[in-house]
Image (cartoon, rainbow, N blue to C red; front, side, top):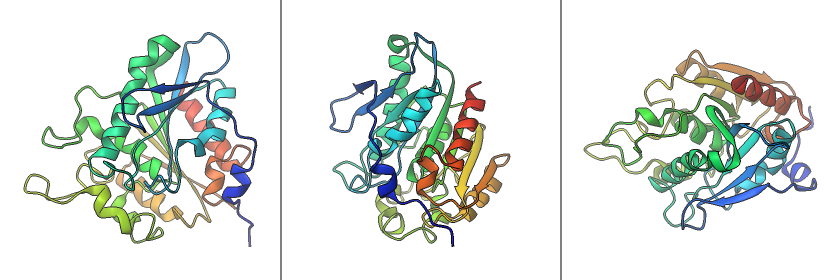
Length: 273
C-alpha cells in the first residue's frame, strides 16, 4: 500500500510569509495575502482559495502558504483569499460566498498598485476551495434574484480544481460527513419560493455552463475527495479535463515537490501564458 503524505509533513516545513497582507473590508476575515514575484512586473495572477471543509476550525488561508510561495518563485503573483467559514458568525449562506466574491473583486481594485495583470486570471482551489473557485468562475451567470449576485464580477479565465468538492450534491454522501453532509444546510441555505433548489446558485455543477477552462486534478487514493468526484464533474462541466495522479492522496495536491502539485503548477502556467 502506498504511504500517503500527512498534514504534519506539510505544515512542519518552514513556513514562508506573503509579500503583503491586504485588508479589503472591516470584517476580521476581510483579508488577502499577496505573494509577489521578484521584478517590477506586470505579474500574471493566480487567485487562490483554501479548503478545510468550509470550516475555519479546520483550515485557513495559511494552509496554502507553501503552494503560494512555490508559484511566486515560478513568476506568478498569488492572491490568496480568506473568507468566513460556516462555523463563524455570518458564515454559510450567503456570507461565505459573498466574502469569496468581494475578496476576488478586490484583486481588480488593487491591480494597479501592485502591477498585476487582470486580462487572464487563473483560479486555484483545493478541496472546499475547489468548489469556491469554480463558483467564482460561474457567478456572473447567477440570476438577479440570487442573494449571491454581484454585478461586474472579476472575470476568471480558467480554474484548476485541486481535489475539489465542487459538485455539492455528489460530494455530500462520498466525503467525510463532518466535512460536508453535516454542514450542508448551513452552506447552501434553506429553500424558498424564489430559490426552491438550494444548489442552483451554490453548486457549480448545478449552475449554468461556466464557459471557462476547467482542469481537475485528483489523487487516486484521495479519501476526502475521491477521484470519482472529479470524473463525474468533468462530465457535467464538459469539456473539463480530469487528471488522476497515482500514489497520491489529498495533502500531496498542495505540497510543492509532489507530482500532483507539479502538474497543477504547469496547468496554471498554461492558463496564464
